[in-house]
Length: 307
Image 1 (tube, rainbow, N blue to C red):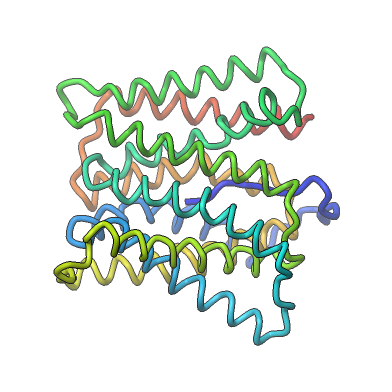
Image 2: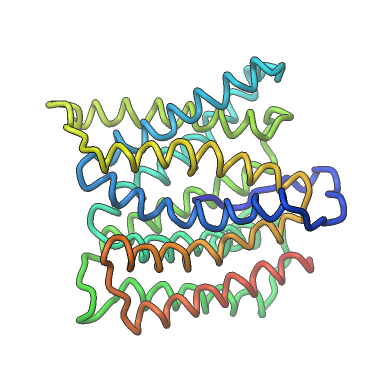
C-alpha cells in the first residue's frame, strides 16, 4: 500500500518509455501492492497487529537503508532525521497500525477501498489546508463521489456484517498518510528517495515494535504459524522491498500521475484476491462502492495532472 507523494521541485521526468522493465515495474506496484491487503489479513489472524506491522517495516527498512549506505548514499543530516521521524510517525506508525489492527475485523477488500481514498484526502488537504491547489468544483464533486462510494462499502447490509469502528480507524490512518504525503513536499529530506523510504520504514518499524511491547502483545510471545510467517515474509520482501523499489524506479522515469494509477488498480486486485484466497464475500454494495471510488480516483488524478 502506497500513495504518490512527489515533490514539486523534482526534475522533470523523461518521456515515458514502454519497455519490459517498465511493464514489470507497473505489474509489481499493481499486483504486489494489491495483494498486500490479503497478506496483512492472513498475518494478523495469528500475529498481533502492531508487532506484525513493526516487523514488516523494521526488517525491510534496515535492509534497504544499510544496503544504500553501503552503496555510498550519504547519511541523513540531523535536520533530515527530524523530517524522516515526523513522516515515519504519520505515514507508517499511525497509518499502518490502523490498517493492521483494522484488518483483524474487516475484509481486506474493504480495507483496500478505504485506502484508495488517500489521493482524495490528499487533495482536500492541498486545497483547503495547505493551499497548494486552487479550489475547483469539478474536483470537489469527484472527491464527494469517492467518499460516497466508501460510505456504501462501510455501511454494508446483510451480505457482510462487520463493525464500522475498524473502518473509521483505517480511514483515520489514511488521513495521517495523506498529511504526510503533503508535508513531504516541504520538508528537508535526503536526496535519495530510496534512502528516504528505507529510513522512514526503519524508524516506523522500530516505533511499532516498541508500541507492541508496551501494549503487551509480546507477553507471551506470539506463536507464529507457517502461513502467518509466509505472509510476513511476503510483506517484507515483495510488499516493501520490491514494491517500493519498483515505485521509486518508476517515479524517476514516468509522470507521477501515471505511476499513481496503482491507486485504482490495487483495490481491484485486493477485492479479487480477497474473494478467491480469503473467502471474502463480494456484495452488490461492494461492487457499487468500488466503482464509485475508482471513478472518483481516476477523475481526481486526471484533474490533478491538468493543474
